Amino acid sequence: MGIQYRNRNLDAAVVSAVGGIIILYVGLVGFRLVFLGGDTAVSDIAEVIAGTAWGISIMVFSALLFLDNRRSRIYGAAIIFLSFASWYGTSGGLFVGFVITLLGGIMGFVWKPKITASPKAA
Image 1 (cartoon, rainbow, N blue to C red):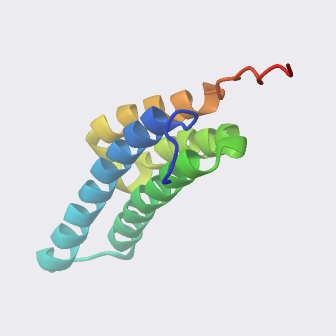
Image 2: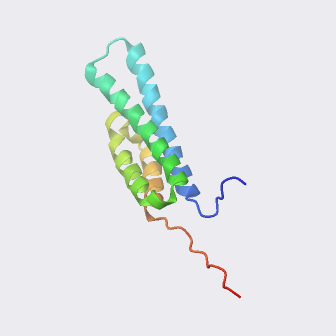
């Protein structure tokens, strides 16, 4: 029993999730800096909230990319969009998260399940 990894998009999901973790981490560090810095503007708060939301969203879409094979193009496109959106708030996870997430999104977008031959009737 268990999940069969043979026909799943594991590599794209892991790469996207790693980039999402980096973007989320940068957003959480931004939270700490904004709220412990003392002088907070509304735009600063909006940026760290958006940056954290991008990281969480990328991680959710990475999990969906692994779990739902039929919609891998949609989830891959969403991850690509979110990687570009992460420039607002986290500077793309200090560029490293952006590149990794973009690569994972592209891998998810172009992925196709392997076609297995059906057994012939005797």
